[in-house]
Length: 555
Image (cartoon, rainbow, N blue to C red):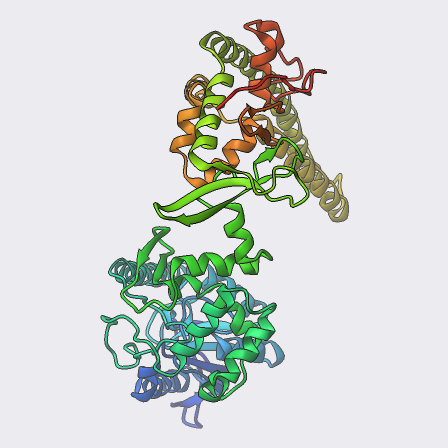
């Protein structure tokens, strides 16, 4: 005859009586598994796992739970339930699914999961398998007080994990700001294994005497454009001994990381992912910033030589000013004489009559600044331009507001329709299938309207302030060009003169197509009607003149 002790919960063991009516040993009536875990490799070497298993087995014996299997998670984290981090845990879940397991036993809740969402998500999965969660050291169960306690324990574990994670990230961020890379260093540097020694990383990663020079040579030669593909660079690295040192051939994946993910580190820069800032590292750099730039250029399909040709700081008008005879772009060169170095612009077309005839660098650039000053819009034009754009901005903004109001009304209507769908499901008008179909249809419409409404809500910016800044820039073209960096001068020149400008020696600059604003300035002569663009703020097509002003400005 079987009976339960008075006040025993559903998880308590059933006791059996002997022929004299005296309670005897527990009768196993529940199949269970034990899950034990430690969060670091160091704990595996100690007694933590053994202690956990011993306590869990004692609990199972007391509760009459037959231990079917034990799952040991050695040195894995409980931060999340990803496949890579919790292999044994996922094996335990799968075991519960395939076998009739009624108890999932852990030492305490934080051995199970340190994330509240993960905890209850997996607990729900276990209940679906007919498996209940047991904690050896904590009062959890299905009673209201036990559920409350379980929720508090899971939340406390989540909070503790969050605090530890924040402390960890703060520590790593501080290390980066000190110039120390807190993670395992890229190939080419030696990992000092501070973590395995139980120490904090306090020194920068030293260069690997064998690997560092091989990677460095490969990067420097790649920056010179000596390799057409990553496979060629991998073959060169192995030829120099990288495969022998590492014990395996270099694959494209490693080369891709060397030329991409690790590249800033090789320059001596550490990215701080929390502050989004770059910090100068204390480790030995392999390459220079210029070489990094060239590597990125080669990877993008452009050669180092092409980059120098485009952004040569010595000759900012090179490839922009055209020879007035052959319409080919001028190039630049430096010659050495008795007085030192002399810089010139000249036509590069060997068939042109101007080939070999030089223009002094300072003469051409001074003439270009004077040209810019002559096409600079006057104050009257800039005032009209500012007033016109402000009017159009206000008009366009009102249209957006009206459109947004229309979508807001439509959204209210759809939300009411969604509410009606739920009410019709409750009163039985819709079957479950009809309800699901109608709900998904209405929710899709709501999402579409919200997107449209967001697009109508254009950002409110200080248009007048922006225009004031733009006018200040436009009204001083010569000075702006002179102050800009060489790389930005190219963009500036294309903005003002999108097709370049011809130059005739001894005569000066000729006919050129102007940028839209400067073209309007030439055509309007202060007439505000020419600035009005009915479609909106964005510029319309230029007038039939094509922006060609037949004038010459001498040097």
